[in-house]
Length: 185
Image (cartoon, rainbow, N blue to C red; front, side, top):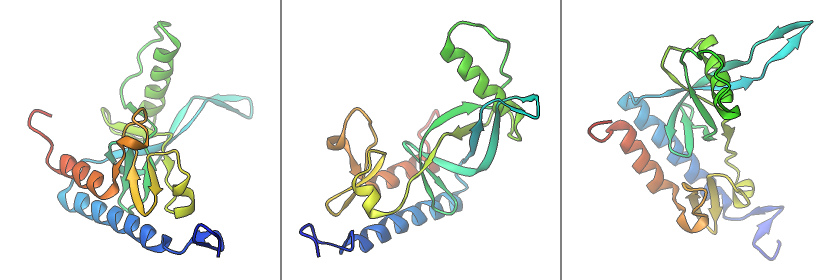
């Protein structure tokens, strides 16, 4: 046993923490599914490439459906992802050469537009899976992390750990907003 209470590289009390994360994610997925909450596409972006001398356009490859819960994405199997980038499935338009960032966004829209997504849909990509392993979450700089015996969400990157909230409260609020959005949205 190490001084910090770890046995074989793992804290003795990590199992309840991991079980809590899994329980909360499963509960949120079940509530969202039962309510028929709006979900969004999850995809992997593939930049343009050459295949046997033929140039292939950038593409979005579908990976499934997720619910957007702020800085966290959740799929029906209760897998968690750190929100990455998003685009809408819209006609990309012609190059405007206004700025590099505008052209990059146009390229992402074009990749989504050529994909098997419905027009107007939101596509999430570059989302990183969040490992539900206590050792990794203890040192995580991502949205989900563990401090002591608490599972926290870093909902504001500039706020640091002081602005973090408990996963239970965070999911309850975000699930509630997705199931019953405020008037006018």
